Length: 113
Length: 113
Image 1 (cartoon, helix red, strand yellow):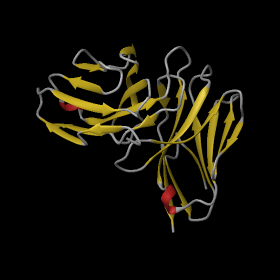
Image 2 (cartoon, helix red, strand yellow):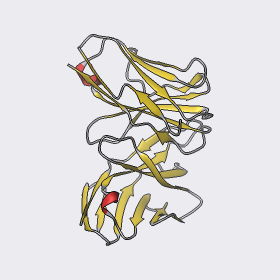
Image 3 (cartoon, chains in turn brown, yellow):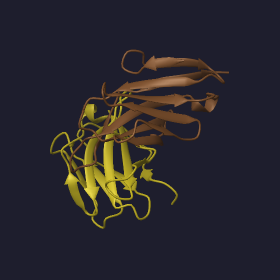
């Protein structure tokens, strides 16, 4: 399944399928991007990050793709599991001397067993 | 401790009261951040500490909000004359330095009646 985070904030997939969560970021000068997972009642949990000098980075079952030309970020989750159900946020670093993160709206992922 | 801890986990107060929210960062992390998250939204940056000093407090909404980190470890977010609009989850994060991944605590849910 695939979503555009800003237009379809809820993504529902079957267990075992691959998920793609999309994010459009705002600042062309941002140089660092992070995906966080947030379960209900918990703080955001770091998943994976990528710097602007890369266009792809892989982790365990997750891949982040960065397209700087169109300011687009995606998170791919392979073989989605029920434990992946959560809200996923992309965040960008506000380029400059400070390190505050600017967050997207979030996409809710629901995994059906 | 293994991660960022925040106390209390829940705080209910009356309009006009003063509250303090505490954050214990990961041991050795020099950078500490406070965010505020409303239901269904991504976290909103409030303030960033590097060591004992506030390196960026541009996200504090007004002068009722203040934060300290006197010894460069534990931080307290203080809110005076609370208003109903202050109700939110207040998240704390820490990172090894200001250039590293931010790790979040579970948050304090503040409800102002």
